[in-house]
Image 1 (cartoon, rainbow, N blue to C red):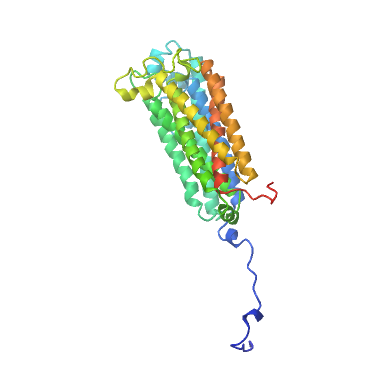
Image 2: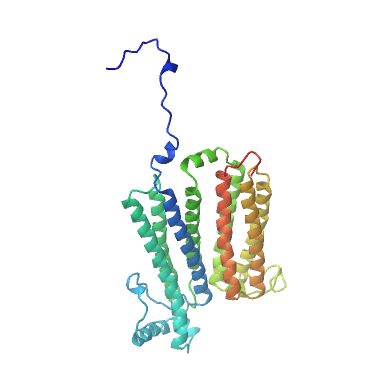
Length: 378
């Protein structure tokens, strides 16, 4: 039987029970490391998907498959008769009739495999996401608060498949030689959104919840705001780049810094109605991409100068990387224009955009959640 305690007993005499360290992380922490590893696989797959998508566009392969069959389309033609059937479908669309008339079956197979590989990679990404998501739910290893976030990635992936077909279907209409540029921009823009979410989640899962809460107290609010604008600015430039790719505007004026010897391209508003020029006039679309590139570089330089004042060495290093990649990307853009956008250079330019996007997001993350460092700043 427990001994009676005096009402005058000092509180300090009561044995203290030490709080268990890491309580925040153990409360629904889940398998953060495993989830992060799974997201890294998705990160790599989406990166490859963006590059393969770019090559599919640059090789004019995107309209080689004229139907959307999410299940049965996973199997390519397995016989000569099946290949002939697919070829006949392609020969019925405007791209073949107006641009590729006389193409051989062998040449058709080349562009077919590019588009089939692009779609197949999309199916693989969907399966990898579904397998991981179901596994973490079924085994109760899902970190607390992450179910909705990871479900969002899957939902956006499904939407991306539907938008992909919406894009392709525009190129099958009468008089179209390529897909509609604004639909291509939507498709690529969503790919970068998905890639951005995955990258952000990988950054968050790289530290415990307690570490993030602690780091947020040391966040740089000013740099957070500036880098948020940088994220938005970079996204606009990515969309403009997609519009350039959609109408092959990168091949229209192979001179720099002027365009056909002038600051403005000739007749930038020659199409009716006026709004069509911003999507379909090669000169104006390339001009917008150039001007936005100059603006993005200037603003990026300003953000970099502000980040140089950060007391955190990791943050400064990341923004140094952003500035270096931004400079390289601008050089790649100029070279792409001067050489009339050959696919070998154009795809490196697109890959540079992906790397720069990930670095900018990393800088934004570290502005909000700076990494701990020693008192000496390293």
